[in-house]
Image: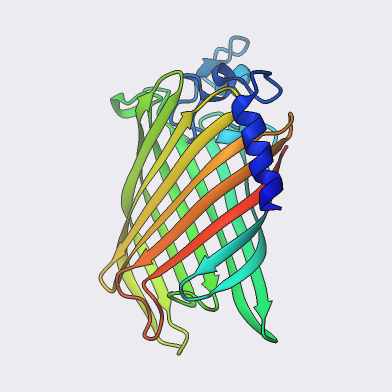
Length: 286
């Protein structure tokens, strides 16, 4: 499978045909990995009541620019993992969302499972929900580059640094860079975190979250993305970094090659600090 994906990557890099989205469509100044942060808005010209709706021309679920209909993507992967679990495994992950006026709802998650030597070598389930509220209406003197958010993240990892790792929090996000090829947004805010080790011991603490989403258009068919999330609590700090290349195969299909690194300063006793996953997959956009 990896050989097939490598061949697809080479084809996409050399291709000049715009069978996938063009740079202007995907990475223009009006597109972003964060739906609300750079969303253009239009006041309803019929009712004149200040109702704000997304500019339909900028909708791109692939990067989190959602319209009133649900949109998103799902990817099937094959991966090699080293750390707390040394496996070759399969998995699935994706995200979907919708924008209604100033509010965007986004769900994301995935599942990975593997067996070896007649035993389970990986069993990880994770999910997240985020609600963004754009300040494109000028509330509190802010603009559409700034948004407030509330987020929930939950992880079950049978062989990870913690068996359970859950976070809930709020905060602000802002677009740092926005041009024809580059998009970079930052988020930060407080919250609460619950971690539970495999031996049954659990901790509930105040916490803080910081996140970065960076997108860069290599050419019309190839995109680079780096997502970094830092979760701090008194007992442990987690740093999750997901970097991948996306190669357009058709209007609705992508090939993805990525590296996911998860580091914990104080994992549960007997577990490694770092999990590293390399993955390759085929994604479908809807």
